[in-house]
Length: 270
Image (cartoon, rainbow, N blue to C red; front, side):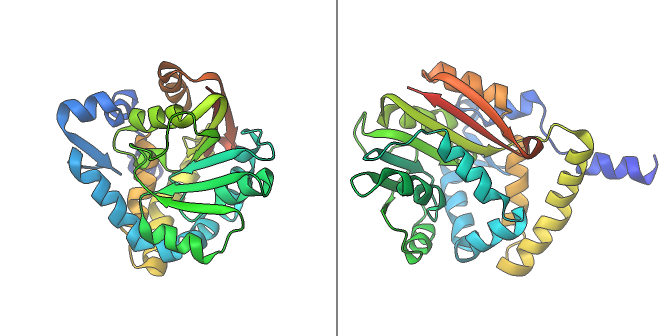
């Protein structure tokens, strides 16, 4: 085997359909195991592992997102918020909202009479978000699998780059569906598999050789920036996620691929 073929095989870590389905709730409940990246943990331990991951990188989170994406993540987030069709006075929830980037974009559209809420389980991420003094955004700590708001509370709900960190993926989406008002909109912005094979190879090279190195140098945690690309390779593909959303009850589901499919917006209505 020549060197180029060996490198391609070494970097090709995208899960097949069967392995991707191991991330879904049925398999997690049957086996009592859940993965973070490619590593399997006890079902009850994943939440702790994810929380520890964000504790490690919280202070550098925004800087690293901008550095590693070349700033394009801001454009992706703007496109996602546009799909919510936010009106003045709307109430918006951003689940797994971290330091508040998406919630800030939503708040700029709701006006003073609206409400934009970041909902995240990690206290250090919330503290970083509060330091940004984002106008019109409220931060609430809580678990995405048990959202602490009543049914039909929000006109729109977003979740950006967070659902793959939830132990029970379908439960997370069911909670989003529950707190969303009838006719309300939802968007899920998540990483996915690039369409073009050459582009995908370069993306894999960057993800597994360069990203962990940079992450380790700047945050002190190479492990955190290894788990990150691994979790993307294990996540359901867009059409698979569409079926999950449809089964939960979402309607008018649309898929928008960004930057050759590196990121995907799933938008839907209750």
